[in-house]
Each structure stands twice: as structure tokens, then as C-alpha cells.
Image (cartoon, rainbow, N blue to C red; front, side, top):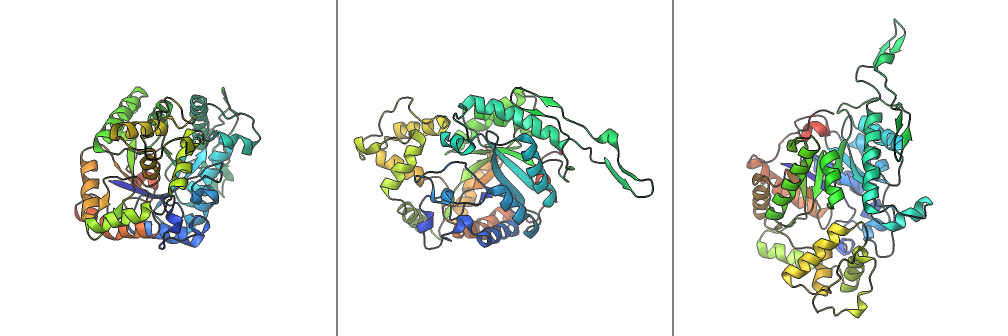
Length: 426
């Protein structure tokens, strides 16, 4: 199985900064990120991942209020790691293809072929004001823009053939001009001449990641992504998601094996199941209900919950929800309806969700094995509620079990991220 990990400052839980084991300034602590990246590499994980966003408010996750620009962070981590992949988020809506091709192409060369780009279209409307724009493009339009953006970026990454640079001192030939290709793209959203002033890396081009769960997002992911981040709560849900992505990939002329699916997992590990449950309870209590309601409100246009009964059924909001968060809001409403949850329960469970990966190290390994061997997923994205302890426990206790069972590597198979993920050359 493939395993990557989010490195999100103090951890995935909104209250993680309050936990006594967290590094309270973790989101802007380079030594902290350096140590966790080395720890993940020692465990032979496939990659470390850094998220990003372009708009914040006082209701944002504490790790988002101040954090490193992720590509700069990847550049800093490249020379202090050797094998592990380095993946970061960057928005197509508020970037330019030529710049992005240079940025990720440079990271790919600095790391000798270990870079990955998580493609997002920026769901938060407030992002527009930070880029001098009056309007935030609507959801499906952002994905149309993203498709052309990736066309251009990949075209620029193919500017030079692998053997274009001769560098022959005797003959004076530095390049073979026949192996240099200008792009000359003229499209609906972008006009880019090229060529890119950068050679290809050992893996050809960075790995493309995507996490869209809406109709447009799934179609984009099935068409463009090498790997997809999924957030399914059950094996059955994961299997249905996999079937949908496989069918969409085939419609775009791709083989399903070309697209890896990695499901989000936030393991909480105890020496006993009772200890794991106590850890879950302690983590959940780091978030007070007012903070949880404010965070929940981000998905629903910052709705004022004060007129609703906290301990009554989750309100019937119809189709109401923030544009760009359709899959999230639909999932919240469905979960409330199917399980009869109150507003309080939905708010608290959104910040500290329950899942099948709470228990002993053996329990976690069993669950991961069941999901993987069912064919529903190709692996997992760790999103430990509290860092660094969550990852330390996972790499120290769960990974050895997976290795012993023949489910995970004991050594890296390749020098590039593409090779370690088992993907074909670009």
C-alpha cells in the first residue's frame, strides 16, 4: 500500500495546538517540519504533504492563520531529505501556468524527481480580494480553467526532450535545437508561448494530486490526477468512490491503474482500545462548542447558529451551503439525517470525527489491511490529529506491523516519487 502524510503544524484537529504534546508554533516552525519529514522518511513513507489556502478569517483553523508558503518549504526540505516525496498545494485559479511550471519544475530538479503538486481551485470566495479581483469564479468554471491550466503546465514541462542538452565542449554544441519545443498555446483562458527555461527531472514531471469530490472535481481528478485524496468513512463508501473514479478514468482514455486513490485516515493509537478511546475523548475536548460551530459555519456561508437549538435535530437547510463546498455540505447533511444527530453533535464531530482507525496498533493495521485488500483504496493519507506524537506512534507501532505482513515496504524501491508510487514514467 501507498502511505503519505499531511504535515499540518500542530496536527489535523482544530484544537491540536492546545494539546500538551503539540509544538504550539508548529505551523511556522521549520525545525519541527524538518524532524517530521526525516521521521516519515525513516519509516519509508511515500511522501509528506503540505496544504495551503489563500484566504483566512478569525474562524480559520489555527494552523491556517499563519503558515509557510508551501513551495518555499519544499525547496528548504529538498536538501535535507533523500527519498521521500515532497508534495504541496497550489491554486490554479490564482496562479499563472508559466510560473507554476517553473516553480514545481524547480522543486522537482532540486529534489531529483520527488515533487508533487496538489491541484486546487480555491473554494473560498474571499481569495479573490487578495488578488485584486472583484469576483470569485463559480465552481464549475474554476474546473474548466484548471483543465486548461494543467494542459499548459504539462506542455511547458515537455519543452525539452530528455537528451536535448548535448553540452559538447569539443564541438561547441550545447543543445540539439530539434529537441526544443515551443508551446504556442492560445486557449479560452490562457495564452502562453513557451518554451520553459528548465529541463525535465528524473521522473519526467511532478506527480499530480487532486482531492475534488464534487461532480466537476471527480471528473477533473479522473482525467488529470496521478493520485486522488479521498475522504470516505466506510469501505463501502470507498468502494463506490473507486468504481466511480475508475469509470470516469476509462471515459477519458485512461486505465484505472493509472490513478491511485489514497483515503484520509486520522489514527488514534492506544496500548488498549480503552486507552485509544480515552485519547479520542481528550482530543475532542480540546475544541469547545462555540469554536466547533464557527468552524462548521465555514461550510454554510458563515451561518449564525444562535437561532437553532444546539441539542435539537440538525436543522433542515435544504440546498443551503457555501459555493464550492457542495460535497462537504451534502455529506454533513446526509450524516446528520442518517444518524439523527443534533447540531452540537455535528459541530463537534466535524472537528473531531469518529472513524474505524481508533484502537490498538493491531486494530489500525487490521483496518488498513481490510480497506486495502478489498480493492477500495491503494493506500492512505495520514492526517494525525496531534503532531508530532500521532505520526511518531504510527510510524513506530503500525508501520512495523504492515511491513511484517508484507503490506508495506521496508526500503524504498526507487529514487523518484513516481517510481516509489509505482506509476509509469511521464
